[in-house]
Length: 112
Length: 112
Image 1 (cartoon, each protein chain N blue to C red):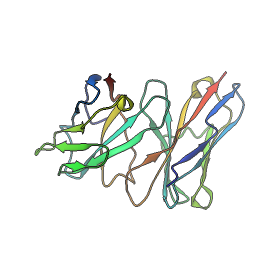
Image 2 (cartoon, chains in turn red, green):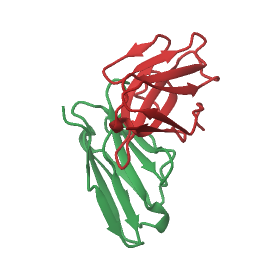
Image 3 (cartoon, rainbow over the protein chains, first blue to last red):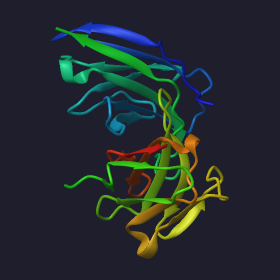
Image 4 (cartoon, rainbow over the protein chains, first blue to last red):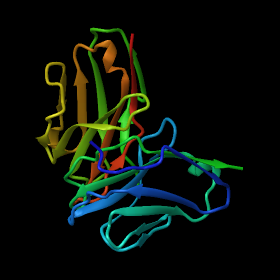
């Protein structure tokens, strides 16, 4: 079973920041938080991952609370192409040797 | 950098027929994964390879499914015989040195 909880859906206005929450209250000390998204009819796309510190890349920022029980994925300027199902996943190690356990994810709809 | 390549993208077959899917991972990626995604669900791992060795095939239905990764590069997933319930998207992913997994576009299988 997935170890994360996400709201089923969220709407965001184009050009605004999209803040996607995720709860992972049972996360262990050596588990990373990964975010993927899946646009309709495409394979999942890696976005970002982190352990303790906040992370930022060209796609998004990941904010992890100090107790690591929750995190927020931030898309700073959402576009229509960001409409997708977003998956928050916790996984041991750096991720390459473990299977990704996908939950139901959260459908983000970016509106014009 | 080329991504994960899968073929075919779509396949329609009649039940009891055999079918094969091919995956070419990102160059240099030593770990290869096959996932199954049913409609409306997140992907589920079928098998994971470290180089040419299958290190996790616990979720692969071995009575009808088989996979191989010759020379530790390309991989083939086969179903023989296919059943109606096998209709799904079959996703291939790869990673290097325990880094994030990168997915291909998937093969959508329809069994009639």
